[in-house]
Figure (cartoon, rainbow, N blue to C red):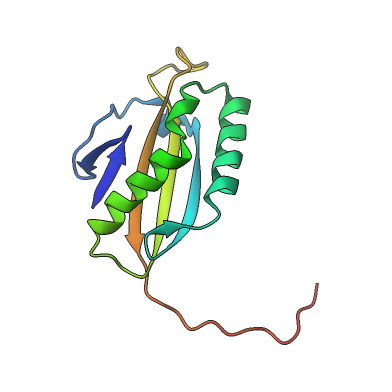
Length: 131
């Protein structure tokens, strides 16, 4: 599966970062899952607003990697490398760079983007809902 790591295309079977990374050892990061229709991520502005707010709370720097135009362009690259399915899911993983055990040693962040095609499902509209 292809992915984009800090704006560079790579194969997920390769490891562009250390297994000692705080994001993977301690969950020091955030993610967003975004529906994609015909290569266009839905509600991207809202997803990125939430991702930026979470990055601010965690004290992650490099907010410029969460750029709407860049995310859209990279989504398109991943979409086209997946044979242009009508429906898919874009995942953004924003995680702290570097190591550190009890507290982070640095504030910079990395961004990994993945895209998966999904089958088109029939959607039934509920006639009643109860809460």
